[in-house]
Image 1 (spheres, helix red, strand yellow):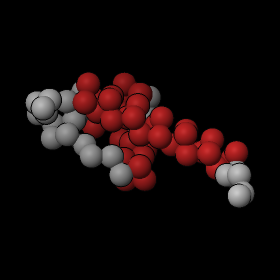
Image 2 (tube, rainbow, N blue to C red; image 1 turned 60 degrees about the horizontal axis):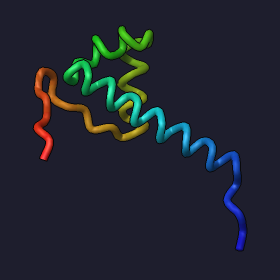
Image 3 (tube, rainbow, N blue to C red; image 1 turned 120 degrees about the vertical axis):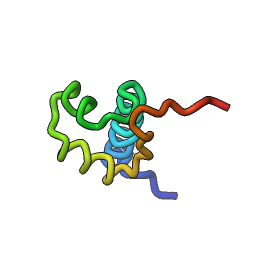
Image 4 (tube, rainbow, N blue to C red; image 1 turned 135 degrees about the horizontal axis):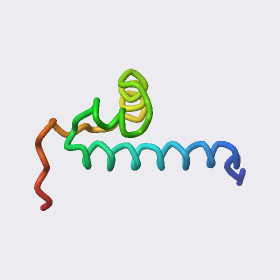
Length: 68
């Protein structure tokens, strides 16, 4: 059985971390993408690209989802 490539596993772990981090930041800023981007020191365009690339479900601005 072939062992998964360590570089690939690392890249997947980094991507998973970034997705969780961005999701939490977007939640913290109640879905406000401009404020999230500004806080993280990135442009809105960079944030939008990251959201699309990682298929992040962005909360509606001003809406805080209720936990089940």
